[in-house]
Length: 416
Image (cartoon, rainbow, N blue to C red; front, side):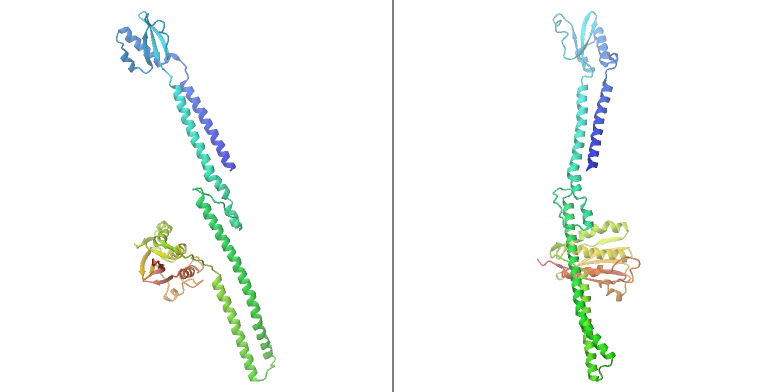
C-alpha cells in the first residue's frame, strides 16, 4: 500500500508540474511584447486608407479580424464618442477624428479557462482512476496477498472474507473453496493415517497369536518332543491353519492399502454433454495447435448426462494427456456414439504400440506399459479414471485399431 501512495504522490506532483508549465507557456506566448506589430494597427491603417480614398463601407469590416467597429466623431456624438465597451485607437483622417474599436487578445482569458479546464478534467479523471484502482483492486489484493503463503504453511482454518467486487469476488470465492478442499484433504489424510495406524496395531496384535503358536510347534518339532505320527500330523495341520490365518491378515492389509491410498469422491448430479466437451476443446485446441497435432471433435447431439461434471472432465483430460504423451502426435480425434441409455465418448490417437497382452493391464494401479519410454508417470491415471467412472455408474475401456489407440468413456444418459 505504501508503494501506491508513493505513486499517487508522484502523479500529483506530475499533474502540478504540467499545470504550472502549461500556464507559464501560455502566458509567455501571449505576453504583450510590442504593440507596434499588433494586427489591429495594420488593419486600422488599411481602413484609414480606404476612408481617405472614399472606398470604405461598413460591409468591409467583415474582411477584418480585429477591427469590430469604426466611429466618426460628429457634433451629436461628441460626448459619447469616447465611450466604448472594447479597446480602441484614434486616428485623424482629413481633419476628422475616427475611433477604431478592436478586440485583439480579448479571447485569451477564454483560452486560458479552456486550457486549465481540460487539464483539471484530465487530472481529475486520472486521480479518480487511481482511487478506483486502489479501492477495487489494490485494497482487496492487500487483504488476500498472504493467503497463498498461509495455505502453503498449512494454515487452513481461517475462512476468507467474502468479497462482492467483480474483480476479486470470484477469485476470493475460488481461494476459499481451495482452502476448504485442502482442509478436507488434510482432515482426510489425518483420519487415514489414524485408520492405518489402528489397522497396523490391530493386525500386529492379531498376528502375534498365530505366530506364537507356530513358534511353539516349530520348537517342539525341532526338539523331537512328539514321536507319535498322528500327533505330528495334528501339529502340521495346526501350523497350516495358523499360516492361513496369517495369510488372511496379509490379504486384509493389501485390500486396505488398495482401498485407502486414494479417496475419490463423486458428486451425483446432471450436466450437458456440451459442457464437458466445451471445456475439453478450450483446454486442448490451442495446445495441440502449438504441437502441430491435428485435433478433431466430431459432430454430436447434445444431451443431459448423469454424474459429476468435474470428474467427467477430469477423466477426459487424463485420457487426452495420455493420447498426447504416448501417441505419435499426428492426430487426436474425439468421436461420439450412443448405446441404449449410455453416451459413449471415444478419444483416438494415432501411433499405438501396445500389444494385446499389455492392453488388458492398462487400468491396473501402478502399471506402466512398454511404450512409456522416458515419459514421467505413476501408472495411476487410468486406474483413477476407471474408479471414478465406476462411482458414476459408468465405465471406461480401451482397444487398439490398426495402430490407433481408442479409449472410450461411457456415461449414463439422463432418462428424463
